Image (cartoon, rainbow, N blue to C red; front, side, top):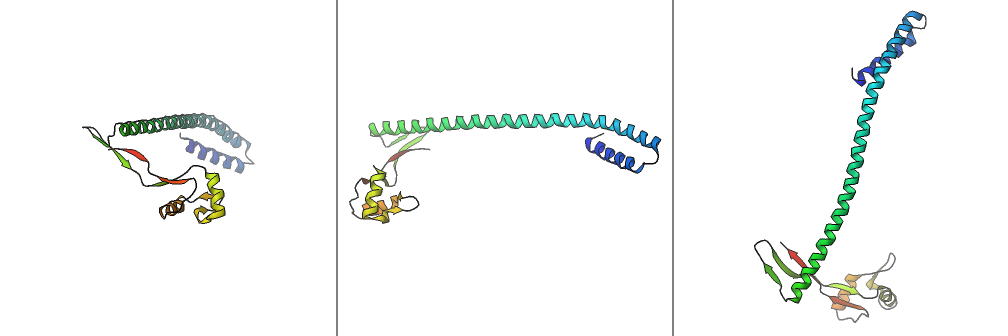
Length: 171
């Protein structure tokens, strides 16, 4: 018998026992049957409990494996970043902007201009006094877009300059 069948059988026996207040012999027979069902039910319940424990152990093992794989992923991302930087700096030193081989095309690409602020705290103090449109307010942050536009328009901003960085593109 399956557990759900045993459960239904036990429920039926309990209902019959409640109805047999005046027949002690029949009540005892049903009680004995219920006791036998109870032992069978316990065995089935134990088997399902073991399955649950196995699933939970497997779920925990998967969680541990995911954590381990996430650490491994972070390590690989760091190594790839270092290798990209290494390749970029060596191509720049060799004054090579493009390398084509059978397995890869490597080229140095100029990124869009971005704002570089040497001392954020000093720039914040200056911008609060002189030109707060260069700031956004939450806690104060430098609006790099506004700083970039101001520099492009010819404004001299202390500690701020436009720089063009480079990255490696591998196809």
